[in-house]
Length: 223
Ligand code: ATP
Image (tube, rainbow, N blue to C red; front, side, top):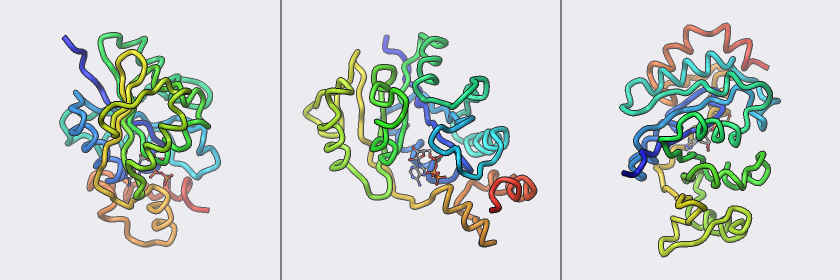
C-alpha cells in the first residue's frame, strides 16, 4: 500500500492570505495530497528584520483560514524548537515522528530560486518530495533552468514530463501551475499602514480577527 502524502506548507504567514490558501488548494488537487498542513515559522531565518505579528496570532489566523477546508490543518511544531526555524529541521522531525507518512514540501517559485541560501536547502529533496508552484509569473521555464543547474546538488533527474523531476528514494519535485493571485503579506501590511481596506485579500474569518486585534497590528506592523 502506498503511504499517504501530506503537503507541508511553510511560511511566515504575516498574515495568511488568499494567495496562500489558493496555492495550497491547487497543489493539493494537482498532486492528490491526503491533506495539507500549514506550518508557520516561529522564527523565520530570512525575515528576522521584518515587522511581524506574534507567532501565536499568526498561528490563530492560519487556523481560521483553513478551518473550512477539508483535509487542511495547522501544525504548530516550530514553536517548540529554539533558534531559527529551519525547514530542514522541520522535515527531519516530521520524518522521525510520523514514519507511516510521506511528506511533500510546498513552496513558491521565488523560494525555489533562493533555496541554495537555506540551511541544507538543496538537500530538502532527500527528506521530502517538493511541489513548486508558479508565483508572480515565474513558471515552467524558470523551474527547468533552476533544475538543470542544480540537478547534481539535489540528486535530481529529468523525466519525460518537464514539470516532474525524479529525486532520490522515489520522490519527485513537481512544478504546479496555479492561478496567479498577486497578493502578498507585505502588500497587505503596506495597505494597512496607509489605512486602506484589506477586505477581499484575506478570508472573512481572518479579516474579522484582525479587526479585533488593532493593538497587536499597531505593535507589529506600524513603523
Ligand atoms: P511577504 O510579502 O511578507 O514576503 P508572502 O505573502 O510572500 O509574504 P510568505 O509567508 O512568505 O508570504 O509565503 C509562504 C509561501 O507562500 C511562499 O512559498 C510563497 O511563495 C507563497 N505565497 C505567498 N503569496 C502567494 C501568492 N499570492 N500566490 C502563491 N503563493 C504565494
